[in-house]
Length: 165
Image 1 (tube, one colour):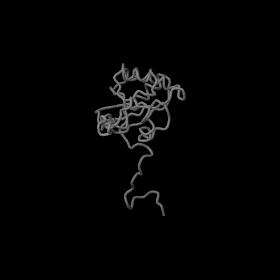
Image 2: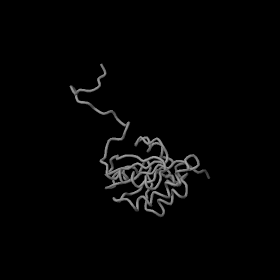
Image 3: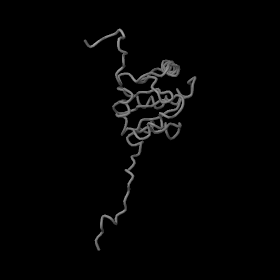
Image 4: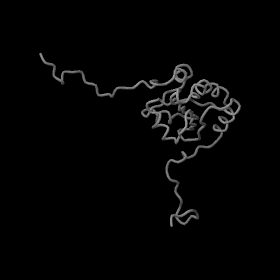
């Protein structure tokens, strides 16, 4: 008896990758113990649809970027003492580079602040506690803005400013 390919079980859904794959246990703990969610290329729109302030954590490889582990431990504490509540999304390692490009984030670790799906700013690296608390407060009080370096700002015709000729 031969097995025809048509007799084999068929799956139409692509295999799903574990978003925690390649992430340090302290980073995974943000999701398992502190209410963070994984952000992937497929789930980013859901993260951006969340109302209010969100922090997207780009962590990278903790061997290459040892500060990642410090930020992973401090982030829930920053969330706890912040004047305004914010949610946490953790970039999945497989999609991290693509997600980082979308927000012009070039340094790891990085906390990208979003409000109602719009870009606010980024805090890169690890900082002293007092500085970190002040920087988070500043991010939570700033208005949203365009992601730096993404897109070309438009200038109305006839407006004074740099010209190409």
